[in-house]
Image (tube, rainbow, N blue to C red; front, side, top):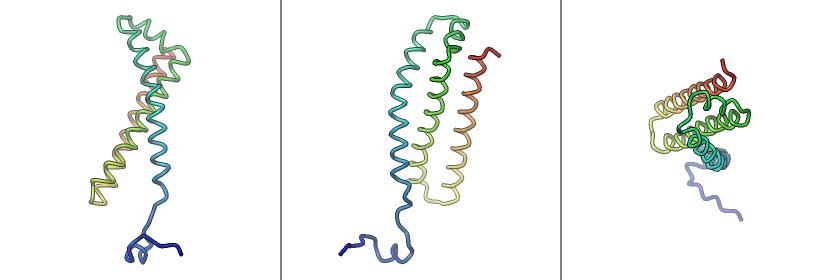
Length: 128
């Protein structure tokens, strides 16, 4: 006999797992792991360009792998930030409309910032 551990009211309402927790958790861990390597690359590149002029920095970013890694760093960083902030908002904001509004604003700002960063990398890398 399988025992249902939910309380009777939750069982009557049909409330239970949204079936999204594992995917969210796994995505957050994968982005964190990717950020370890991307941050190491970013810091090594940045330290290598510490006393370089703009032309050298631009030539470094114009290399295809550096541009791709810079874009991957930006996109992964903002995705990871949104996932973390989403957990905080869902756990600590208890007014439904404020929770939804906060999630929308955070996602909008993250997408806008990521697109701006990608555009900046492409502009410097492609020389326009």
